[in-house]
Length: 219
Image (cartoon, rainbow, N blue to C red):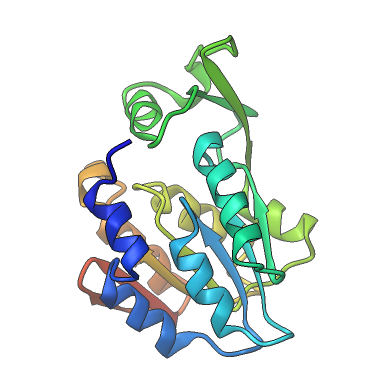
């Protein structure tokens, strides 16, 4: 297979330098980090090596093909402080989603969800699909008895859904730093970046946009 530019940048350690710089300025050795949208584990590896013996990462990747590569990268790099999980994070009631087998990105599913009610998606598992369980982020944290210092996500627009759910069930008692990549093309007219900022402000967060990232923290 041809190695495309994003993968080449990951191999060379030059992918998204501003995001790497932000992470290096934030992370402390004892941090507990919740990573959403790990892909192949580029940022996971960087963050893991910044942590000390008390630090820990729970890292979520939804695409089964990417998750398999990710798990192998964890093993190759001996990342003993990383727990990898294969879930689709959502506050919706649907229990499973289906990706075309060997899909490398979630955009087809995203478009289906954008163009229909989430619960009405009638995908069924077959020989050409991979099933992935959905889970609420607050439930995932509770099940794993994991209270993160940092939530770091690149989830192609689903940060709206995630932050809204966290506001209802999590942010009242926990105030992690939140860092996410902005995806204006995937927001709708009502639930957009300004909607996210309003939720954050109601929870006493302030924020700074740094390139395509929004860094959110308690005032």
